Image: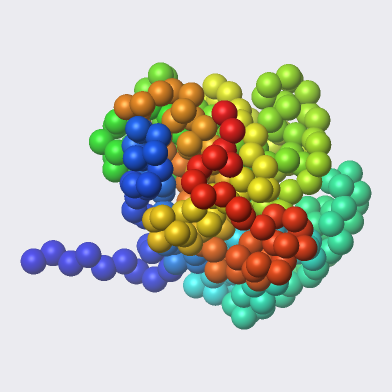
Length: 335
């Protein structure tokens, strides 16, 4: 008898289920599949990038024994890096904007990370969390700045693991894939791999308001309008990881649609997901409608709803933001 034992945190990352979302499949006439990344040991898709970045840094000597991992993050990458740090004997210093959910901040501290909060400012401001993290890595002895936005090990994690898993689990029967982008790692690695398997797969971005990627893909210029409650996605520049993406087009999603979809998935499918996952599923429905009935669409369920419970699942907070869900079905998704 052979055993199926995974060794520690490192071997527990990945191989997440590919779930058929039945309510949306029935509603669209397509097969809508969600890669359940919230079932990674650190609770999000970012576990994959965190692990790959650390392993590559060890391989190249950029991260040495007893060192410190430093990163600027909206939270989930920091959580993954903190767990990898604990598992492999490092210290973690995480810099994040103070407008992220309290659940993620508290979890990072519980994991033993040193958390530095910054004001949310434009990327051009030297006090932006990205630049602050870079400075901290330079100030500390024996420190490694993960630099998830430009570190190609991020997208490589998804090229080597996430995408091949989707391809295998779907039996190669995929007509379209859609997801949002923050660092560009997931969309860069997944679309690059899937296009190599079948160039006819329709690959799309779903972008929140306040991000410039939709404009960039549709007009060639970065132009961000408005803002969004979504955390960790949306950006106004092309990263090295995003530049790996092979995309055919883009959709845009609103905060109201995100909240409505999160509630819809919870009520109809028992799926308790975060804001980026809800946005990704909106993209899946939009792509299903674009391609027509009979197609198979895959997306990423990035993380669970527990990290956003005080916000996107809090009636008082939603009412304050004017985002109280009111939809009875899928009428909140426009084409």
